[in-house]
Image 1 (cartoon, protein in one colour):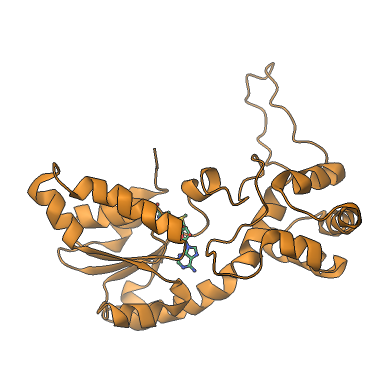
Image 2 (spheres, rainbow, N blue to C red; image 1 turned 135 degrees about the vertical axis):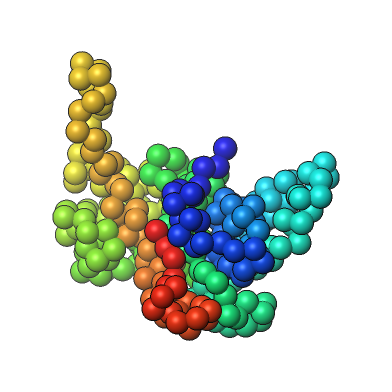
Length: 259
Ligand SMILES: C[S@@+](CC[C@H](N)C(=O)[O-])C[C@H]1O[C@@H](n2cnc3c(N)ncnc32)[C@H](O)[C@@H]1O
């Protein structure tokens, strides 16, 4: 089951009003959109990942077709699904007559579906191709970066987008490993990172599992690669300034809502 993050808190902040226009810039599986719809708003659901968009349509569709009844059908007529990148927010809003709009929601990162079901290497806990593209039209995968960037470039990437303290040592190990065999799967990368940082600690049963929680040693490098592959910082920067331009009323009082 899909559980949207901070659902109530995020949607409360949007202050949804009946027939108000809201852009869900990161539709995912539509959990936040559905809550806006339930509160009477209209939604423009923007999603760059084609498969994810189809999942969202299926999930929301299954709730709005018979036997959902009258209220359900009404929900279906108040949402538009678009496969777009939110970096073009203003153009998208204009094309779908969502200017001015009453709120824009950004729920950043990846969805549970992408992590667990997409098969694109977002999770270090699975054996999958090192792809990490949310948009399959992008040309460069995570494997391409690992196999193609210099040691210096990889170090900077792990530092900048992952704040990884062992960035230089991991980059050096990546460059060494790829001379033997190019990176293809998540396991290839996890093995190299564990070679530098060690394996993840096991939770001690003696402590009742209450010891200090540590993140997996590969977490930061995986995050850095995902951000780089999808150009997430550039996209967000571009979208945020556009969000303020398309909001109804003075931007200073309404603002773009995000978690
Ligand atoms: C954390 S999930 C959103 C989950 C969603 N709120 C829900 O309730 O299911 C983030 C989603 O944003 C999408 N995304 C990331 N960058 C995007 C972009 N630049 N444009 C459009 N969608 C994007 C991802 O593909 C992913 O599905």
